[in-house]
Length: 598
Image 1 (tube, rainbow, N blue to C red):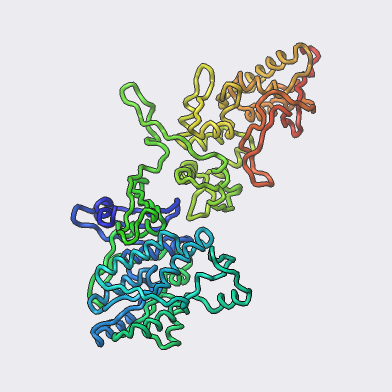
Image 2 (image 1 turned 180 degrees about the vertical axis):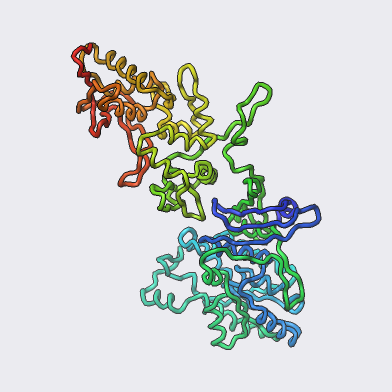
């Protein structure tokens, strides 16, 4: 849909909203009153700190917000020149187009502006930036920004003549540029001296200055031609060559002056030169952000909103830009997170499935309450999984995310203490706060103790790693049953007697496997309780373990959550078939030392 159609779709109510891209906040929006059919409220905008806010600021400026670097006296001087000569012309460079400065000046001058002149090399430079630096330099322009910058000239052409000044062949040589080890596909071999000469002589600033003088020489304009730029180096070059220019600081320079905190952007402001109120509504800002980042989300406090996407590959040259807008449901993994159990008369909406592996969640969980990690450590490319990761951090309170930095939450010390004490009941009580995981554990079959196989969800893998399930040949066995030491000792004795067949020794991995299935306990919980019962004074003090090599046919490489060691990793492999670590040693045999033992 086009910008006008998007305005009708995004009807907002009073409150605070956030515009995000890949779970990173780009813009905070505050609506003071509800929108209706004919009135759209003017929002208050604020850009949070982050490494992409310079692009978000440029998009907000293009939507109509006041340019932060355009001084009122410079604009007044430009109006005075236009009043003296009745009309003036503007020669715009790349930065003036991309940052939205050109659009602001054109709207301010109005009929005093005769036409806008753009060099043909400007379009070439835009394409060069997008092609050579796509995916290599994150601060350079993307294809979506290039398409939007070129379309701005088409929009200006509706109210003011736009002249593309064609430079003669050989006037620019940026197509043969050898910087960064990148050459044109069909460029001939150039000696090293010539390559260095190209790198020294050829720069975008010199190309723009040469294009300005070439326009004067060939077209002989009868009106003053003012060079419009937001590049500080180019403005200095204009001053040295006595070129009339109008300079405004770029958004990047504004951010450099305030590297931390948020930047307020005026969406309603007074233009002192044209005596006109300028405004920008939320839909315009979202449209510009979508064309910049190709996909953004406008969400309210409950996670509901719209997803706006832009694909420059579907835009024909000269056509009006359009975006796709789809509603977004709540970010919660469940439709009703804390709803009561379904009754026969009314059933609650089922929780959603888990689409993210537990290993990716643990990759960003700090191993110490005082440390921070990066969100990039999870290596997540799926946007749904990324949303779930942020939601899991809020539900469990294990970590919190700000921009790309992950810090420890209030429950992390409890998790580390529980892992140190092998208390997997507490560990699962923390992760049970995720409704989808809690709902999966509640689906255990009360008769067989089996958990359902759900190949479309990551919940079974969560249950195994968190010590809530045990892998057997037929699937997964529920492993969080609470058993006292007396009943546990009785189950161990029975399993030992069946496996030993009258001998004092039995295979320890097979004993643990039998107890896991009989008592519905995960192996890591069985090992922890067995270690406690084998201690002096315990219910199994008459038993002992011996070191022995084993290779039993029980599930091997059982991933389990454990206290982070020197490697700062939460997950380790528990290989039951090769032996079990008990009393600080690897054991493979369980021996009954009593003389009256069978």
